[in-house]
Structure formats: structure tokens, C-alpha cells
Length: 267
Image 1 (cartoon, rainbow, N blue to C red):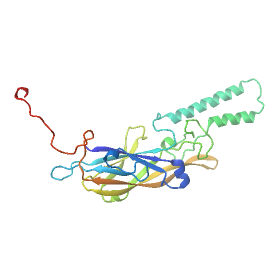
Image 2 (cartoon, rainbow, N blue to C red):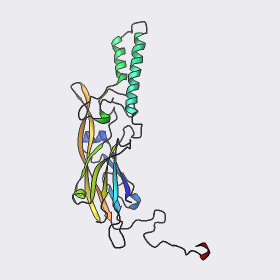
Image 3 (cartoon, rainbow, N blue to C red):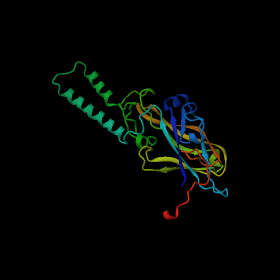
Image 4 (cartoon, rainbow, N blue to C red):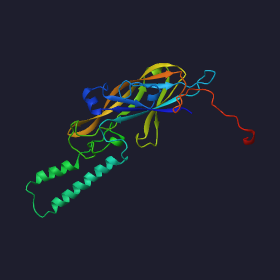
């Protein structure tokens, strides 16, 4: 059975959008640090893949890579799937309660326009639905990192949607070292889709690949807010070696297992 390797793609979305590049704003991690991966927590990760072969030198199994993109400084992906909808519904209910209280107070407020403006601020603003703001981005309210709805469209006041990997290509793909594809999954954390690839571990060497990553910038057009997709690229590398896998407990390599002979009366 192929070994599953995970690569976390953590993006500082706000800074990347401001700088117009993912260079210096992307942090990559994998679960192969003890097997030789370099550059953990930087944008220059080299994922170590130890080849597995039979005694005759033929390939024993492929490796499987899984990429998981996340946004730095945004609402964590582990919150319930309906969290944003729940927060939007709560703000609507609170605004209705405030309007009812204002209408039933029995006396006119000193500044009705100011009272209504405060209620409007607490109500928040929904992002306009377009062909480019599909799925979980459609019609959602803008929230900050604490989950409170906001109306300010400045880059420092709201939580960015998670980055989306839209393609994986480059040398490792062209040389048929790995075969990436997007798969559907019931996993709610990845919103039902994730990128995975099988890797040919029989060809040692270091190979570069590129990820096309889509970020979303909040913009105002014709008096309405919408998420504008911004496509950027990020590079990473695979290092395939012919070294056998090591035992994680004893650090021993491949060899004959120490089997003790069974006594005749225990046979």
C-alpha cells in the first residue's frame, strides 16, 4: 500500500495580495522531516521521498502526496461548515431585534438616522454573488477573524477565504515523476475537494513543480462588495532517493527479521 504524505500550504493572503506575489508569503510543511525533508516552514520546501524497491531492484510501490492549502490569520478551517451562515443569521436576528426595540420604545430617538446607521453597521454586508464567487463564497457576509460581521472593506478588517489550488504542473509533471489530479472527498475541512498525486519513487533525483494558487481580494464595484480572484504561482521540490525506509522506532534499515526458532513442544 502506498504511503500517504501531506503537504501543508500556508499562505499569508493579505500580505501576498498587497505584494502581488507568494514569494516570502508562503510557508510549506510536510510530514517527512525525519526522513530528510528540507526547508520546513519556508517557501523553499524540498519533500523527501524514499524509494521502495524489491530485491531485484524493481519498484515496490508509489508514494502519494496530498496538498492542503490554508490561510494565515483567518478563521480556522476546523470551525463547523455552516459557521459563516450561522453568524450571518445571528446578525440578521440581532438587527431585527434592535429595529423592534427602536419601534416599540414609545419615544422618538434623538437622532433616528444615527440609530439606524448603528443597526446597519451591526447587520454587516453580504458579498455580491457572481459567477466567480461560487460555492461557500456566494452571498456570505464579511466577517473578521473573531467571526463578527463587518462592513469595512479594508484589508485589515476581514478574514480571507482559504487559498484554492487550481493546478499543479512543472518539471516533475512533465517528466512523469508525479501524476497530480483534483479529487472529490466528503472531508468538510477541504470543502469537498483536494489535490493529490502519485509519485514514481523508482527514479532518484530532485524535481521542481509549480502550484497555481487562487487568492481572493475584497473589492468594491458599483457600490457593492465582491471577491475578486487573483491567481499566483508557488514553487516546491521533490527529492527522490533510493534509500530504503527506516524503522521509526529502532532507526534500523532493511534486513532479516530476528525470528527465534519455535520449541518442539510449542509448535
